[in-house]
View 1 (cartoon, rainbow, N blue to C red):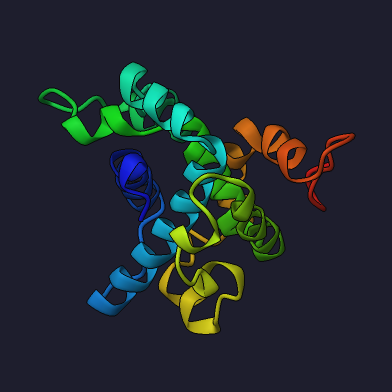
View 2 (view 1 turned 60 degrees about the horizontal axis):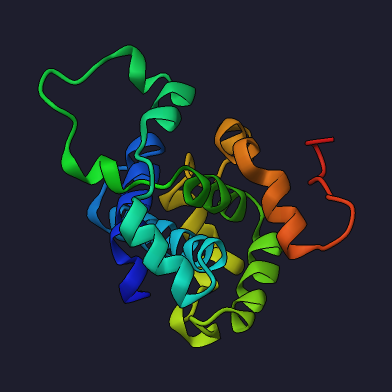
Length: 178
């Protein structure tokens, strides 16, 4: 995990898992968490590609989960107490890009290949095969987290900026999102 981005990565992955929970069982929890962590790590490394970007993020903060909660309907049921502190570390763009990567393994492979151009390097993420080449077991463990239609409203928030970053030139859209 990229240490300078670890609070945002952890909170963004946690938000994804709370919005799109895994199938029941401890193995499913672990497999879904690995997939969410990989997606959030790649998304954060691409969103904050330089040391200066990461420092600015630490200085200014990521923005929190409010807009994402609104999109998923979680804002309709306010928490009884103050929102948990981890929600303040959620980055809307990182979550949106991670949703794009979870829904499209081919796009995730392109994104993972682009990490070499960041100051984090390609080795900062580790083996992201669960994200780029998910097995049937990975899909069974996280059926909601890997479902393109369910992830669509979150992925669509910042899909164009991710596609523009990964494919310079006219923004491309995924099949089914034209």
